[in-house]
Length: 255
Image (cartoon, rainbow, N blue to C red; front, side):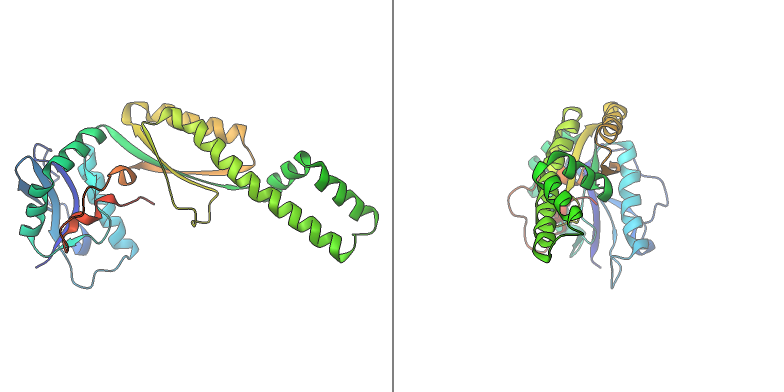
């Protein structure tokens, strides 16, 4: 039977709760290879990323993370068998041990932000005299010509786009002093900012306080916080993994 892999820990990691189950209600177990261990279960057939299974995957990682550092794997990381998992642990031992040391005592907070539409339009009008002048001219002429309406719309859209970039940078700069590392997510997410921060557990309260200050200072932003999470965005990939093994999922990002 194929083996489902949740994450990688040190072999000295405390035992997980007895009877813990994961995806497909399979019992979670530990595979050891030298100084490393993998948190695994039997892989169910026909696994799909349904909410129940995603939550089961996350719950196993959360339970493992309570007791110490775990390198999280992406949902759906499946190896042909237990031997394939322990083989990769042995082959990549130095890389995984380095990552466990670097991420010990740290968690990930993912920050997403978007504009509050009315508030950002107010900012754009206040900061751009050309837009204000054209809007006022259109108002005085009963709405303006078709061409002037189009031009005003284009000017506003360009200004909002520029402010998205400026606000994303400002938000990241406001929060990065409280983090040990920063990972910027893909741009095609529907958010003007999608950034993950690696934060020491001991300084998590200070980081969240910085988020609240940013919300106060930039009220035209809707800011969402997801965390604490296992450090998905900071499990740096090493050299290529052997084909068909689960360890290739170790560079997974969080959502």
